[in-house]
Image (cartoon, rainbow, N blue to C red):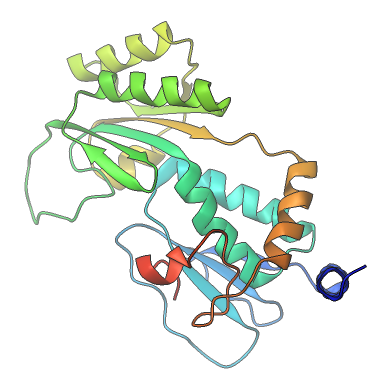
Length: 249
């Protein structure tokens, strides 16, 4: 066994003995004082201040809201339960978000857009998160076709949810397109509508299929990856994209 492999195994063994990292939404609860905390910050929200001295915490500024951020939160909680290090979980959150595809359509301002004062506009809008960036300007059903085609080419899992009243023409056309593509839409109540302020919202999420075995293999890869000389987080790839994009605080 090489020295690097031995050091990696020691790091993994040490991580397995540590308390699980707490995963919290920054707007729903502060960092834990007793364990390390990974804080997920919604799009447009400011990262919380450092606060009192205590257990370490890292805040990750995410670009995706709604169904996507809830999926990330659940998967990160699973990773925490298997002994992932805080730094590895923060890097994993950024990498996983970049590998998701997410369509958000709704009547009114999308929660990824800046607030426009007291505007009463309720025009239907849609945006697609793909390969680490947002695509807008196309019809929602066309964005849906693009998302589903890419997901099936990668063998991703597809999740879809709706909220509000889907009686408008745009909502009906998007629903019909998703049904034609074989995507089942579940009713998520008023959660997305409450955040957007519109009358309706439809979300479609394509995510890599990750089993417990996959999470275990990824944990070893992140733990053994070289560390960024600036922020100290694992670097997957040629450079630390997280420092460049400013997603970590």
